[in-house]
Length: 388
Image (cartoon, rainbow, N blue to C red; front, top):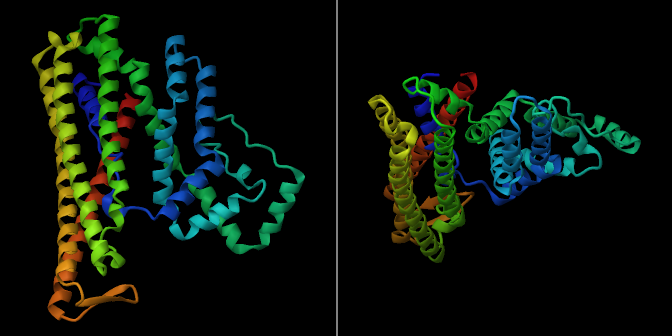
């Protein structure tokens, strides 16, 4: 891989928005609990980690130092937490809310989870599912005549064995392993004016990459968690809009969300300044050609341009939420909730409310598109690094 492309790819992987919550699309608490329970009952995260570690111990492709570092990485709580988040997001995208509760009940039946332990999605292709007892086999045969249960089983099997889950896990593991393996750094060293670099210089670059990636991930996660605590997805529901006390409480939550967004911007700017200083002081790049520094600036510009677009979208959503709340407060008593919709006394107010609501929907669609493009870009980048 060309040195310029390598630096740009590393930067794009660091400066991402994939971990941020979508404020306009907060999942219902019951649905979130179902998804967490599905992961727990199928042992997805635990089984993936155990299989991955088994592959690490048996593989001849790692040095002892790399193997030890990767085992430490995958044994940590932070790795498990990040993997759980990846699996949760995957299930949220692929599991209908109408099916989640039924899937939980289905998986709670004895022996059922043994059907869904990860096999082809694990790092260890030789992994075998746990054997079922005769009683569990009999219980499963009883379900064969229940068409709805069979359909749910097929749905879950399709979700957990889909190639998209395999690629999702591969992309996650690659991004996690990249700072530890150091193979790209070896190539990087050779391409930097053809001059071999010291081991310490290469290690310093990979440590810089790891710190930058982790710092940006934590910035994203802090913002996402702050939004979740405000229950931002329920700020403009109908029950809120028809109650003055609920509107006032929602406005306070909105203040908190806007503060979180401002803090997110400050943290991102501060990290940019720090990473730029660190990059400029790396021994590997001090005497490198000018195009190396130029590639850094280009990578930073591209990464932060995407983040700024996202920040502007978040600001737009929060402003629209405030306008709807203020509109509802100013017109309290002139509309009421009926059959899951608002009934207004004034046709003018109907037009105003519908216009505001459409703007919110448009901003939410824009948000989804931004995050979708970011996810696709990260997948392409990790594949690029893997293939080169």
